[in-house]
Structure formats: structure tokens, C-alpha cells
Length: 299
Ligand SMILES: Nc1nc2c(ncn2[C@@H]2O[C@H](COP(=O)(O)OP(=O)(O)OP(=O)(O)O)[C@@H](O)[C@H]2O)c(=O)[nH]1
Ligand SMILES: [Mg+2]
Image (tube, rainbow, N blue to C red; front, top):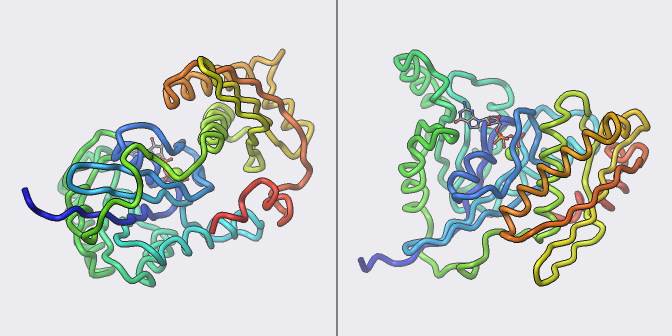
């Protein structure tokens, strides 16, 4: 009863697509960070704050650590994921059951450089048909580093998430909460809105649309009864614009509808959403354009 309050920062780290953002949303109990089947979905650091009676857990979802390409955006994402690790109280290194590769190795190397406990969470255990195969895999990972503990989980199916949360919580420092109990993220409402729209783009367009798409909120008006959101979807080329808009605007309409539903659920309010598609040539390769779109001032 009398145990002191705990509070601290917990980084969710790992290669792209292992389920970091899915795990964050499940731990929080609501959808904050966007997820998709495509690797490199998360592009920005985002805090998810969970306030409980015993502790405040400040989760940090990070872009997946991957083999760096030459493009400015990709390099920026790798740097971002690494720099986040410096000020953490606990790191959760997320890997996928039965699939360890070079990029996991990179993520592990980044964790080793940080000066805090590292919990290994082995995700997607629901996909392992032969449960016996998991034990030798765990043994193999144990050899790689002295992890503080290892918890096999399924973020998707809510398996073992409570154990993981307990392991995290008991490693947090004794401290008063950093954030007020009603704050769920450090990000603005318009950031969340832009991300939810981007998720629909990634999910609905899949491989048709390359990496060079981003969303900017031009206006965000919160009236008594209605949220009015005006968004621009930036692409690099004419043909990409046509893909996003679709035949007679069908694609864009679908994106808008799905995003609006999600936004209404997140903000618990009616949403009016207006979207435009515009072309900005070569933004993902240009340092200046990255800055303009908010990729450069976060760390
Ligand atoms: N079967 C299964 N799939 C999962 C599980 N957790 C996440 N996924 C799926 O894995 C894919 C990637 O999930 P994300 O949460 O977007 O992964 P991420 O690590 O945040 O990816 P990046 O942001 O690209 O680094 C999605 O299709 C998820 O539905 C799980 O426990 N089991
Ligand atoms: Mg993610």
C-alpha cells in the first residue's frame, strides 16, 4: 500500500515492423501511434503517457532502427531513434519471435550504448505454431546480451502485456509524476490528426505509394461542437497525386472517411475533415524541406 510512486521514461526500440507502435497503443489502452504492415511507418518520436495509481509510465515510441540508406529522411530516422535512448530509465527492445536479423543486431547495439536496464520483449508469439521452437530461440537471444529480463508477448492478442508492464514499472525510479494525470501525449492535436491521416494513406495505398508522402495540417479549429481540420497531403510527383486521389476522387474520399472516424474516436468529438493533395518536388531528399515539415526540430 505504502510503496512510493514511480515515474520514468521507457523507450520502445527495435527494427521496423516488429510491433512497437502496436505495443504502445495496447499498453495505453487506446490508439495513439499509427501502425501498418509496412516497415518504417513511425517517423517521429511520440510520447504516450499512462498514469496509474502506483506509477506514471512515459512510453517513447521510436522510428524503427534500420540499415541506413542515403536519403536524408532515412538517415534522420536512424539518428533520431539512437539519440532518444540517451535519457531513458528503461529500454524495451522489441524483436519478433523466430526472426532475428541484421537490423535487430543494430537495434541491440544501440541499446548497449545506453546506460539503463534493457528488457527484451519477444513479440508476435501468436505466430509461432510450434511452441517448442520458442525456447531455443530465447536461449539464443540470451547469449547476445545480459538482458534485465525477457518477456515473450503478443501485442496484437494482449498476451503477457501485464507481465511486461510490471517488469517495466518496478524498474522505474521513485518519483512524482512528470505530467498531469489527464495528459496522454506530448504531441499537439494537429500532430495526432496528421498522423492518423498518414496512417490511412499508408494502409490504403500500400506499395503503390512510395515513402515520399507526408501530411500537413493547415488549420485546426476547435469549435464548441465540431473540430474542423484542413489537411494537405504532400506528394512528390503528378502520378502520385493521381494515385492518392483515385478514380473520380474515390481514394481520397475513402482516406478522408476512415481518418475522420478515427479522429472522432480519438478526440471524442464530431470532426469535419477537408483534404487536398499537393506536389512538393524532392522533399524527402532535401534537408530544408524536412525542416519545414517538422522533421528536424524534435531532438
Ligand atoms: N501477428 C502479430 N502481428 C503483430 C503483433 N504486433 C504487431 N503486429 C503487426 O505488425 C505490423 C507492424 O506493427 P507496427 O506496430 O506498425 O510496427 P512498428 O515496430 O511500430 O513499425 P515501424 O513504425 O515501421 O518501426 C502490423 O501489421 C501489426 O498489426 C503481434 O503480436 N502479432
Ligand atoms: Mg511504429
